[in-house]
Image 1 (cartoon, one colour):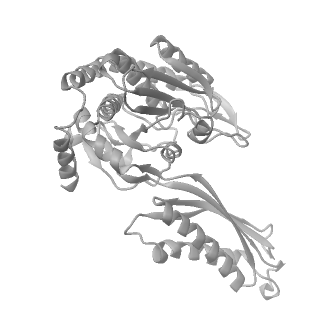
Image 2 (image 1 turned 180 degrees about the vertical axis):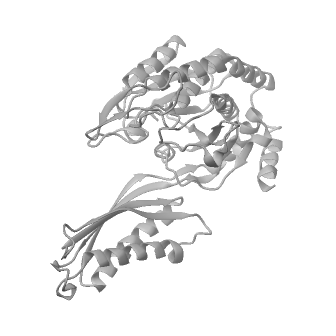
Image 3 (image 1 turned 135 degrees about the horizontal axis):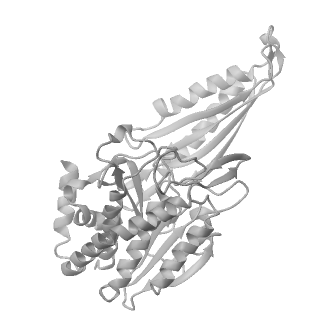
Length: 432
């Protein structure tokens, strides 16, 4: 109920503002409907020929050809394979960036789609298939459609629009830089300087056509940690002659969970610490000298993130010292919080309602997944949202997860995403 009232209040507050003419909005939404078939065709082509992070050469060329045909200024080779199109309206207004990620995953597709991927590669020394198992193919197709429609309506627009087609959202190969951080480093948010950025993500596990968002921390920061425990090696029959790093590690793992359950204000935002790997020992009757564990930390608030990092170091170090061992803690910040600027969110939430109807827009709880769109949001205000694409005959709770061979999305979910991105863009550029 609160969610509906929140949206209604926002819709009401926009009636007196300088938004784009309703006739233009109606026209644009109709054009999106007409373009749906072409957007699906683009998605199927990209799906059939997926490419891994920092290797999106064919995908980038496909996008470049489309943007040049639209008459846009085009830059290529940003962050290795990234493509940026620039639409200048010639009228004063904000610089709005719209982003789509292009990379696929080292996953072997397992379905009977006529356009299923047959691509293979070697990844981390193993032969594997390549698949768009996270919906990035649909993101590219949607943004291609947004570009085409906005170009058609250039005379009704204000400001400048940057169409950012980003490589390596899933992370660059070992030893390489890439993704949103490298695009930012190479100046994608400059010349002209971006005022706001919008992005979306298809979800095959969300009701078809439903659009979901959350102000502030929407998706988690993703940090990796490694804790190396050094004890004293001994015979398994006489553990008192050594310091057992395996027992110490077990105590540390339990201690890490109390950071979440007893030391973190979970009524503010959720948080997760998970140990995903632990390695120690070489033989059953030898207490080893060292043990090592690695895991992930998920948080939604930068201050909480910093506090949890400090508590992990303190907990591991002091537990080890209490047993006569030593703990070395390394924490790597991988992806920051996907943080939806509250002011921007308030401005565009009603745009989502225009696109798909009030009944299809929901305000959600935080999502513990991570998204490197967050690196753009660290530099400029941004808004990120989900678009549901679970087939109606499938229970979303039982739908194949993203990043799996059976991942499936209903292509009818792309039209709501196309409409939403168009409405968000049009409304924002015409804000007073």
